[in-house]
Length: 219
Image (tube, rainbow, N blue to C red):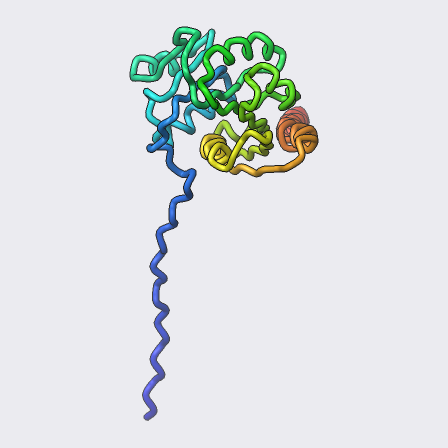
């Protein structure tokens, strides 16, 4: 009798450990970071930074109406509503665009020498932001979107000429805490990003809600 051929055994592939991306951790973040505005988007960014290990004592937050969670963080090292002066190395503007004039006046007083300014305000151009700070200030304008609230968003960013490679890397590290980051060279593209990527998901959700309501009405 012929011996039965042995069944080929498939070796289980040993999963390779993914190498952490450079921006995957903020444990070694050493700059003094100031976040102005900790609402839905600013708050999502803050939670993303903390989740990636950014030390609380490196973060200052200005928020006129802090929620319970933010106040709790203030009791554990985060500087909440500090005096309106300082030397912040990085300033993130997470407020609504209509508040820009008042917010920029505060931010300018708290900016350190050679500070990096990151704005997620819709419609406020780099030129508008540059006027509030000393000449040569590095400015990054970015537009995140709603999925950032669960760490699955995407931000598109553009920088002025003063933002060198190191500052762009810092901006990437901070913005990627809420999802992927893409850079563009032309600021005009931010208008399209705001309309499609920034506002688009809200219309999809609205349509889904309308379909749900219609289905319920139909029994």
